[in-house]
Image 1: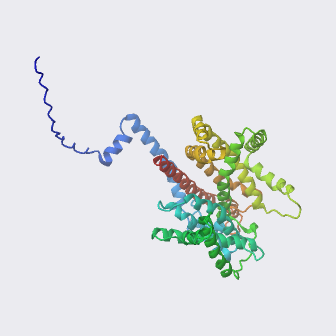
Image 2 (image 1 turned 90 degrees about the horizontal axis):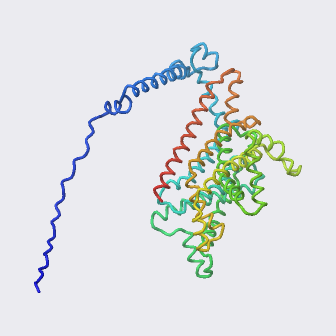
Image 3 (image 1 turned 90 degrees about the vertical axis):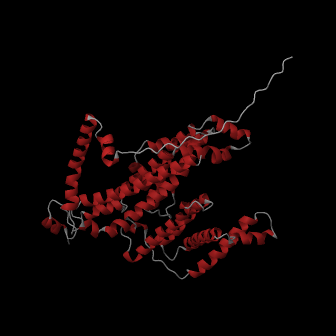
Amino acid sequence: MDNQSTPKTELLEFIPQPSRPPVITTDGLIGSLKKHLFSNIWNTLLTISVFTLLFMLIKPFLEWAVFDAVWSAANRRECLNASPDGACWPGVIDWVNGLIYGRYPGDQQWRVNLGFGLGLIWLVPLAFKQVQQKILIALSAIILFPFLANYLFLGGSDHRFNYIVACVALAYLLILYVNIALTSLGHKTPGESLELLIGRFYQKRAALLGRLLFWLIVTVPIIFTFRNLTLVLVEVDAWGGLFLTLIISGFSIVMALPIGILLALGRRSHMPVFKWLSICIIELVRSVPLITVLFMSVTMLPLFFPNTIQLNKLAQVLVAVCVFAGAYMAETVRGGLQGIPPGQFEAAKSVGLGYWYTMAFIILPQALRAMIPNIVTSFISLFKDTTLVSIIGLFDIMLMARNISIDKNWLGLHTEPLIAISILFFVFCYSMSQYSHRLEKKLKKSR
């Protein structure tokens, strides 16, 4: 038998290829403009037409609003004498305080500034990645901050319950920043230290008891420290301007999502009572405009309460706007739930999860993530629709702007206040839109 020689295998030496040189773009600014705006005859004609149209629209506005405008005058007559074809901005500048605070007393406006400042301070930790338990912080802001803001904005010496709850909320805010500071330094929080102490005597729920005990320890000194502080009562009828607009829109936006989720789940429920009740609420509210809902809340809501209870108009408006926004949000949430594959429900059942655990931890997070653009669009529409409350007599920023035109010094000044408000609304709505885009990209990256 012939001997079969086995072939020798030799390792091939890897010789890396030289790196390719980077792409060098020689277009520059002129080349980029030529490529995107003047690439062919039709693109060139379209570019010239668009820029000509923009010039024809923007040039008269800039001449009226900036170049021919009057910036300093005592009344509208002086504006007309100085520049009859230009804008009269002194009227808007003179009413800036009213546009922001409405009829809120000038010597008490620091309470409004302090309230919104504390709200921003409460939400600042949500912007930092290293901060833990962001959901808990957001929930605490939604639940506790309204009590603190209500006490600051309303005041009064008879509202002892509001004072105590406001102190509880202030104590939580202080504890929040103390915990963040100690955690960043690598130290234990006071709640964790009390947890170890309580754990020696009572192991069950020692963590919760330790945090509650520290919360109580911080709250009591705050209550006694500010017990002699008396805030002047400012009735809700005096609230107005941008201050009132932010209260109505902020409260409605916060409440719209949970109301919409409950109505959407109720509409998909297999229990006829909850299903048809949710369907009736959604279809009834969505079949009428917001102004109709506002008028019904002002005239019909007091009929459901005893005569001894006097509802203020702001509370009635908040109920109406929340129900209206919740009904529209319910359909948005229902659309997101229908986009979830049935396999997600079956997988949750296979591991033994109940209905509420399945919805809270599996279905709703996926549905809400997919519906972020629609949800933010509803919030933006709701923010703009709050200007309708001026029709039923609330002095929001729109009604305060209308009052400028009936001021004896600025009689007939209509256009300038509306343009100023339009710019303000654009800033708020554009900021909400950009935040939704950032949130959507962030959630896509984390998947």
